[in-house]
Amino acid sequence: RKEVEQDPGPFNVPEGATVAFNCTYSNSASQSFFWYRQDCRKEPKLLMSVYSSGNEDGRFTAQLNRASQYISLLIRDSKLSDSATYLCVVLMDSSYKLIFGSGTRLLVRP
Amino acid sequence: SQTIHQWPATLVQPVGSPLSLECTVEGTSNPNLYWYRQAAGRGLQLLFYSVGIGQISSEVPQNLSASRPQDRQFILSSKKLLLSDSGFYLCAWSDQGNTEAFFGQGTRLTVV
Image 1 (cartoon, rainbow over the protein chains, first blue to last red):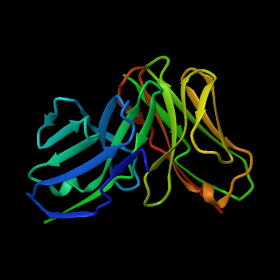
Image 2: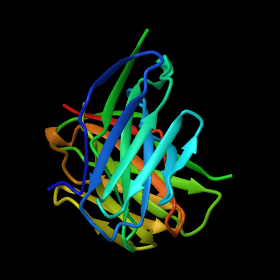
Image 3: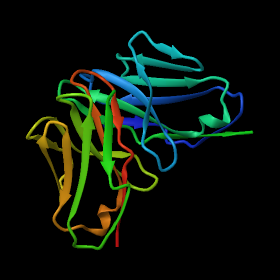
């Protein structure tokens, strides 16, 4: 089983749609969680950290469920510029090992 | 502010040739450092990470090696490249603690 698993996508949605991505992790001792965005042929960039209480940044909402070892990202009112690959990232226990999921590709169409 | 430098941006190397990719971080001390590889259309594979000078953890057995000769310098090397070593190599750093990582712009390596 992979340490971090994501919906493979691609998700093809119209502008204005709401879309949700899921991610599961296998190590219950994982300490920190993040969502990154990667544009084609570019380096990944931090989108947001994921906190136990859930957190929101504009149109983006991240949720963490430690009991189910599950992380989600919700994007509301999708924009064309949201088209990218979204990577779920888990920091493993105290080793500082940072593991990326394989990513979910989002295509927002006009 | 902190910055990360990774070079070169692109590289074409023949099979069997050596490789050295360098990554340096400025504006912080004792960072965690990471090397990842991304094959075309695939996710990021963790190759090596380091929590301090001379401390290297290897994730995937292969013909690559990493070194950290200075606090903010991380080097990825190979003595003899294989075709399968082609990919997008990314260096990243994070502060000690449970913090996010920041990436260099990557090196696109093509082994021919």
